[in-house]
Length: 91
Image (cartoon, rainbow, N blue to C red):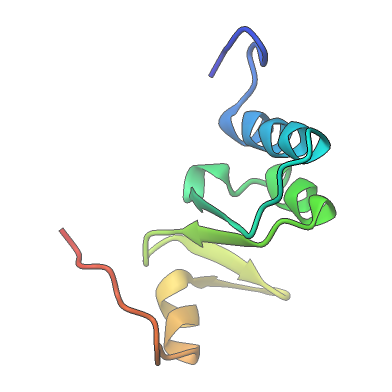
């Protein structure tokens, strides 16, 4: 992803920079919704430092690290069954 303002940055770098620049300009964020491509070891800590709540969309077969264990998103979802959350239709 390359733009005039952010040349040759990977998507997660561009996202972190955009959010940081927006906060510095005075915008407030109630949260950020992003696809899994933005969940990198770079962007997640950056967004946490900026204090931006984050909701990521993953495929259920994606592997994630929870504590010291590697598991699939589906396994994590089974630990926390939905109550008021509407599941997205699979298509």
